[in-house]
Image (cartoon, rainbow, N blue to C red; front, side, top):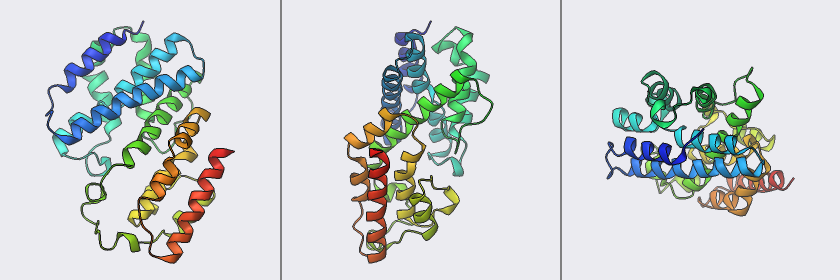
Length: 256
C-alpha cells in the first residue's frame, strides 16, 4: 500500500534541509510536484488500477530526488558537468535507505528504481517487464511535458551563461543535421547540438519521444510548439524558414 500523505510529508521534510531561498531549489520542488501530478493524470487516463496510479504518482515525486544533492555539491543541474541525477537519486534512496521513509513495502522498490534510472536516458533499456516498461514510459512523459512548461519561462542567459549574447541570438542558425533529424521525427542527439537554436529544436523534438495520446494532447492544448518556436526572433532567412518547417512538422505530428 502506498500512503501518499506519508510520502509527501517525507518529501517536504527532506527538501526543507536545502536552502529555501535558492531559486534552483524552488524551481525543482515545483517541477517535481507537477511531474507527480502529470504521472497521476496519465495513469488515470490509461485507466490503471488505484495501486498503479498511486505508484505512478510516487515515482513522479521521487524521480528527481537526486537533484537537491546535485545542486548542493555542484551548483548546477547539468549532468554532463556534474553527476547523473537519476543515478545519485537511486543511490540516496536505495543505498542510503531513504526509500524506507517514503514507503516500507519492498515489493515496489525494484520498479521505482528502474523507472527513475530510465526517466532521463536517451531510450528506455531493454528487457523490462510489462509493468516496469509502463511506469518507465509514464515518468518519461510526465517529466518531458513539464519541461515544456519550464522552458517557456527559462531565461536564455541562465541556460547558456557562457554562449548567450542578446545581440546575436536572433542571428544564430539551425544546424543542417539537427533540422534533418527533426523533419524525420527523430529526437536530437546531444552531440549534434551546436547552437542555442539547436538546443531549442532539441526541446521541441521531445514530442517524438512521448508515449501516450494524453501527453501529446497536453502539448497541443497548452500551445507549447508555438510558444517555444516564437521565443526567438529569427533574423536569418534560412533559419526563419527552417523553424517554420519545424513548427508545421511538429503540429502535424501531434495532430496525427
